[in-house]
Image 1: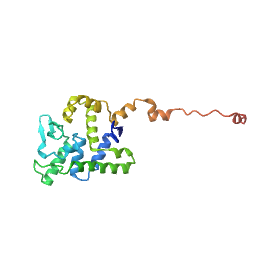
Image 2 (image 1 turned 180 degrees about the vertical axis):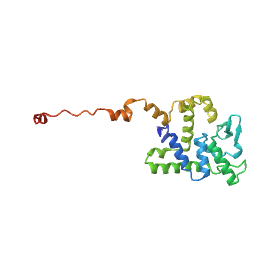
Image 3 (image 1 turned 135 degrees about the vertical axis):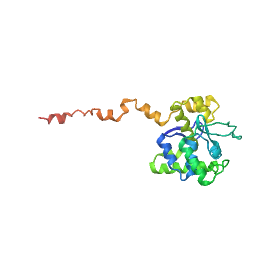
Image 4 (image 1 turned 45 degrees about the vertical axis):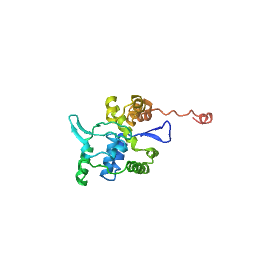
Length: 220
């Protein structure tokens, strides 16, 4: 987990490692929560967008399975089509069939505040289990933040990441994403520093302090 202060408000921005993101997903208490966490962490949706997704929004295209995220009039967000992992598509199909959800009905039929509380409760449980205070700063948006940063580090073109995530202002995107790093990237760079490696430390010769004059006089 990587933490960084917000520039103009209290709290911390959070970037999760792949294992930590999966730990959040595994904390889901039911199918709706699982889908909500996956929509944020694997598709980069905002919490207000998560509660608007319908089964009809998951479409097969020549480039694979994508999610149609429609324009939000209140925030003036524009239409986009982020890719959908097979795992998420499977969960959506199963939940839609089991719950009898119509093609035009919301899959995660709760308020955006409820999604926020779901993530908070999952983070609280992970905090209690691990003792890592960093979990206390986790927000829904941090799942989206982790998603965007991971795409860039996997070599996805910045322009494509902007298109999938609905970012339009290049300077804002560059400042918040191109200059940031995931925990995996930090771990990879740390591994390049030889004196930080455990095996190097274990091979370092321990220098004993010289004997005192009193100790030397008693040596025969």
